[in-house]
Image (tube, rainbow, N blue to C red; front, side):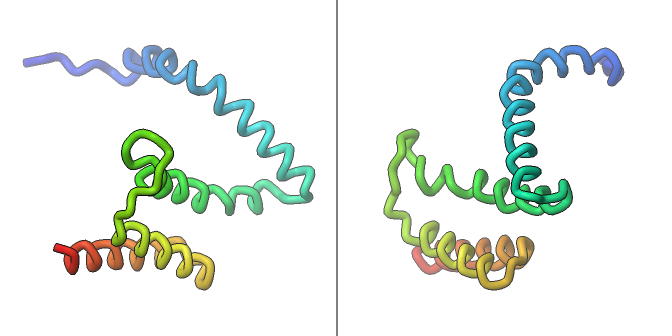
Length: 114
């Protein structure tokens, strides 16, 4: 039976793997925190912008970098569903409703397309 390593044994390699990326994430966080503080925002107010930023980071690459280069692929269901989701987000300010209705629109349009 293979031996399962303990979390303590896996911690150091994980820290080593994360170190190069953290060298860019930490300064970016400091700059964004300073900008939010300079704008008079509390940390709680600034953190309200994290979910929309994450959603944009997840949704934008398939729309604008579909073939590995900056381009907009004329994939009508994706563009239509993204536009609908953006309108829902703007109107309702609900992340859950935006995700659910955007995905339902995408699946529905893809089913109609065949």
